[in-house]
Length: 311
Image (tube, rainbow, N blue to C red; front, side):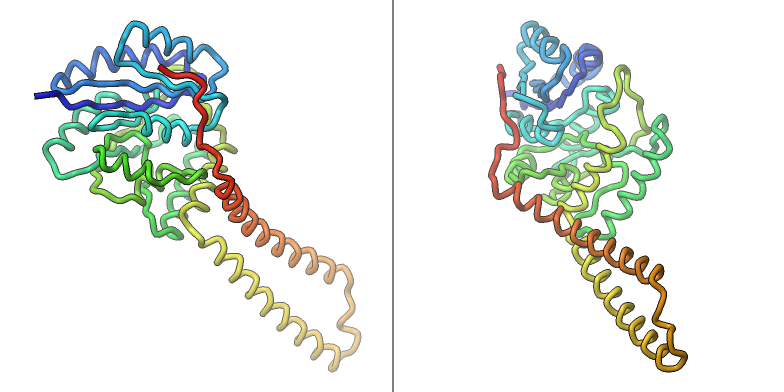
């Protein structure tokens, strides 16, 4: 009987320091314990500017299980995830970060759960964020609370991209071919039975995170806009509230003018009100603009990624 295959998708961007550590950990500590299956490792070089691609090529020459894709430029982690899933050929597909913050040894209970229990996916979530800046932890918690209140797609707090999926779920994810991608939301949106494994935060073994606070903020904004239209409703409600307040203010001013005369004067306060209302209008227009911009990008039908070379 032919062995089943697990494809491990590994996005990489400027990770020359950690790739050898990741590979050695996987080969020496994890794969020998899963001898009943075969493996392929798909490294996606997301336009790295260091020696990431060279190291991957050297490993692929020594190990035929290693495949690689190299993008023509940096398209982002979401594009790398989509490309890796698209090229994966395994019966099961795992998605992992190369920095070892996703404990490789969890692959063993993840595979056992898929083969012995009625699940389509085994995903992981962090129970702590020890080692991360406090400000990042604070805003991460705010993000999960906010998006779960305004979106119909529930995203588990602390969810990682690290997961092992059966082929039908992978095909469902690939069928969502939108240009503006937020994988954490897509994983939940496609459904399927998912088992969650919790673990405490693990710090990077080497190198520095490529995610800045601003980058994470934009990524969270992408998730909110991709999976909720609540901001549009907020803009509409805000506009209506200020219309009502403005109407009431006009009535009050008219009454005061009739009773006391001269109470309608006060240019500084008037200018402040104008600027305040103008700011609200620009804020609402900005929300509309974000949705229109993403619609515009989708209509262009640009490829999610471009592969420069692969093996």
